[in-house]
Length: 399
Image 1 (cartoon, one colour):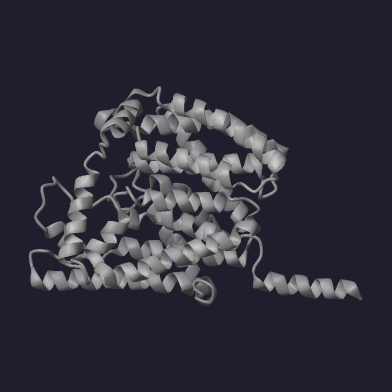
Image 2: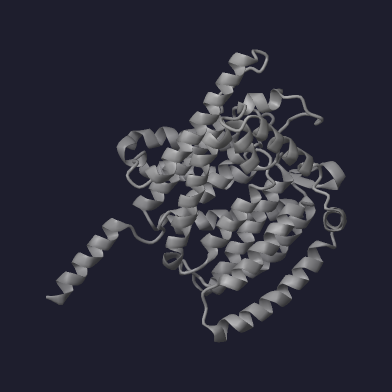
């Protein structure tokens, strides 16, 4: 039963970068593989309810997360009372994100070796997407010729490829999880990941790759005699990667517009709208339905494409407090665990995810981001019980 439950977790994690894909329907189809395996993972977790849903080590994250969800929900209900046309709809997706974080964190804590499998799945997912892109399978061409895969957003595809690439770089340089020398074969997949990033035309993915790569080179834990040549070689590689990515016409056009004119493809206007909404309703916001109900110059959704402004607009200061508490605790946990990981990779991934939230539409409801938060914030090598066991073992060896 437990092995089957973990298999459901593996498939769920693998499918997150194309969670909207369904062989039977569209992105709202209930029979999407990602949704099916998420439900199976949760259902089978109920058989070990007290163990899998333990709050002993997760409450510092779960409490502010639930508080955030409840406050935004309450604000949405209040707004629907005031404006009946703004129909209230419960945000099940955010609740599902919190539950997935809860379960994944506890699973890693119970079985620290699980982290090695989960990291491998993230790499395999990135390689899978790259092969799909290379062989033009499941491709959709959208606005300005941007390429998406299996019905998912190009920015999420780009984010997945960026994180997979940085994990490979960390494995090649630091090898924190103790892979054999066969890990150097992973170099062969780096060009595939790069071409996937380029084809998405995501300037956000390009920016995250640049920041992540430079952050890794600057803060990696190496002696100076090793760090200096690695940093030098890394900068040369960075230059060629940058030039290679900008050979893609779509990405090059969008990037040059961003550099030359500050074009944010309409995001700055949405950010201003969300900020004005917060200024008008600073205490508890307008709720998610209220944000969509307010008159605006935008076609379609009023989503600000910025998680931080989204929380302020929908939940006000009251929601922003538990949100910031959650982020502070995640950051503290990641930094506390960086020595145990024996690499700065979790810190780099945290930086990327937090920056991604600055420009992500619907980012608060991203199951991929919440799953990655759980992986990098949980202690991956040993927990307190392991420490006690090791101390007892060392004591016995003295005698």
